[in-house]
Structures are given as C-alpha cells and as structure tokens.
Image (cartoon, rainbow, N blue to C red; front, side, top):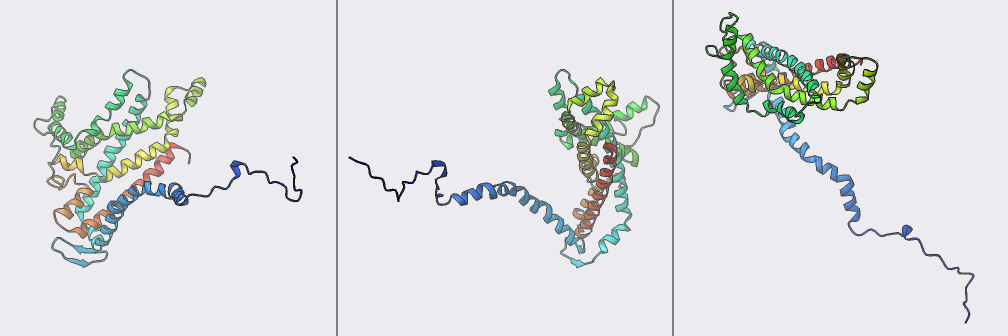
Length: 324
C-alpha cells in the first residue's frame, strides 16, 4: 500500500489556536464598549446629576432673579442692576460684610494654627494613639444646637462661667450678646471648638505622607525638631494647607449656624445686627422680608467675596508653603 502525495497541492499546516479567528458572539462588541467606555461615565453620573440639580440650577436661578424685583406677592419686574446698586449703598449689607470678615479672621487664623500644632502632636507615637485621634473629632459630630446651648451658658452675662473667671481679675461682667467685639469673640470660640479637630486630622493625614527619610537625614545633619518642622513639614504640607485654608475660607465667609443659634435662632444677629453675617442677611431678606430678588443679588455678592478671599489666601499660602 503506497501513500500518494500531490506535489502541486501541498498540505497546509493547521493554524495555531492562538491565531485562529474567533467570531465575536452577537452583542459582545456592545458589551465591551459598555464596559470600557460607558461604564465610567455611568458611575460618576449621579454626582453630576445631583450637582446639576442642586448646584448649577440654583446658581442660574438666583442669577436670573437678581435682576428682578421678585417678592412673595408674585411681583416680577425687571430692574437690571437695581438690586446691586441698591445693595452697594445699603448700610445693613456692609455691616453684615464687616461682621463676616471680622469673625472669619478672628476664628480662622487661630483655628488653623491650633490645628497645625495639634496635628504635629498627634503625629508622634504615644499610648492610645487611635482613641486620642478619634477624640479630636467629637466636637464635629456634636449637634450645633447643643454647642449653642453650652456656649450660651458659658457666655451668659449674669451667671456665665467666662464672666465668673474674669471677675477673679477684677473685670466687670461683659454682655457678650449685646456688644459687637465680645459677640465676635464668643462666636469665634464656638467655631474653633467645633472645627479645629477636623482640620487637625486633615493636617495629620498630610503629615503621614511625608517621607521619614527626610527627617532622618535632617537629624543626622543636626537639625532640631523645631527646624525640621519649619524646614520640612511646613513646605511639604503646602497642598494640604491650601485645601484647609480654602475650605475654611468658604466655611468662614458663609457662616450661618453658629451666630444664628447663639441668638436663639434669630437671623437678625442681635438687637443691632452686631453679629449678623452675610448668609444671615440673605436669609432675612429672602425668608423674612420675602424680597427674593434682593436676596439673590446678595448671594452673588457673597459668591464674589468668597472668590476674592479664596484667591488672596491661595496666594498667601503659596508664598508661605514654598518658593513659588
């Protein structure tokens, strides 16, 4: 029996399995596109939808009605820049701006410095480290109403603990709610008590990312702990400091809860508006006077104030935290 091989038609070797053309199953290309291209957008879309509804829409709504005389009775009349020009000459608005800026400076500057020192202390090794770090967040989870009740008692005119301590040094009792500067100081302590621990934890997280080799090299060169803090920790914390300062700027210029609860929920800010903030002024104009157009214009002026304050603080922190 002989095997006949046709030389003109050589036998083709079979294709390796790895090179075989596999026909895609129906729907495979669509599923691949959905998994690789569309899935990331679908996952992040809830945030953008919520931001569109609760962020961009209110911005556009208030910008539109800031050019109108719009009140509760249904009156909608075009005024152009009338609300803005009237507000620039409104003494009550500028008083609220001064109160806001003053309480922001009095509260935020000590708050950031205390948070930085507290974070540096928490960055060291000691017993019960986790519990102590969690403990600094307890003021943040405390109800604002409870904080207001406690601090109202502390700063009471007749039976307050603060006036009682000041009396040891021969000082007269201070009416913390009736006078302008004392009310600023009292509200500033409320803010610092609640938010210092929060900022300290953020600073601590930034300190944890600094390489330990830098401190070891500095110790070998004979640098003290204080010099290491100013020459290594502060420059390396520049991105974290920018975040904390910008976040504190936005929170400080939109201050509302602490001064409102300090005066038993009254947004007028005392008998003479001595501690009324811009946010309280907006609430009063919109939901007490029912002048929504005027309140919308005040909201956009506050937005402009936040942009200016954030830009100034950003430039200052860049100069402090680094050479650029």
